[in-house]
Length: 60
View 1 (spheres, rainbow, N blue to C red):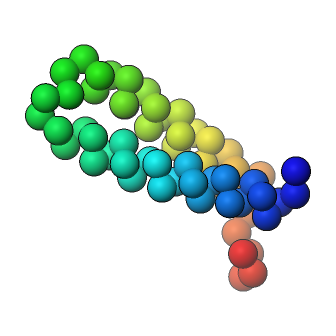
View 2: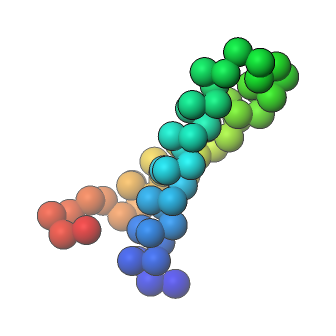
């Protein structure tokens, strides 16, 4: 897998993260709130690890 493919997949994950954040605003989420929070934490860890491994440069 090349770096461009990885960047594209991380961009998809970041987009889904925004969706999860919007779910947290739903008042009727109930116990799924725990799962959404866990997913957000794991996504944040993944994104942080990616950024540490492949620091952003001037050319994406």
